[in-house]
Length: 169
Ligand code: FEO
Image 1 (cartoon, rainbow, N blue to C red):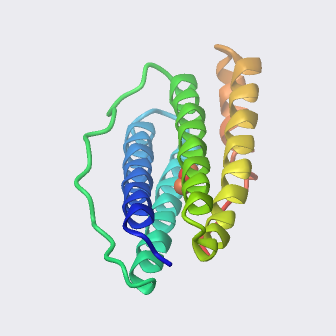
Image 2 (image 1 turned 120 degrees about the horizontal axis):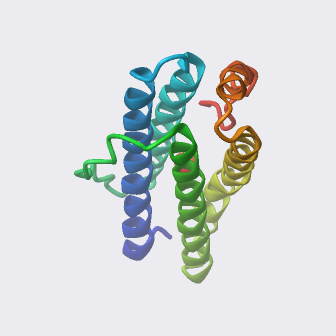
């Protein structure tokens, strides 16, 4: 059964995913006006698109279960970052937060004995493992690079190879 509590919690996740998309869109716009990080820029734009797909997946699920998915108002995200390192740190921290939200949802689905939602959420559980891992790899590389401009150039090349996980299904 699809309870009001479950529906409200899923609608809150619609907001979290939409806000994630907005945050990464702002990172992309900021990165786009920085010199020489075209691939990082593309990475953020793509990541933003994927978060939108995460949101849409939730919206369809809520409505298909007989609920009503609420399209939320969004907060203005951070528009600029002191460095690319800061942006990627924020990406990691944000994904850790999203994972907590997903874990919380899974807990509610078990409390509510809503196994259909529990099953649906497993895709997000797996997705978060991959997204956090990817964000950690990027942060580790940036830590190695430090302030080295050549290193940053290579990072931008390297990110081309990164297959952003959780590609749209
Ligand atoms: Fe949809 Fe990056 O969490």
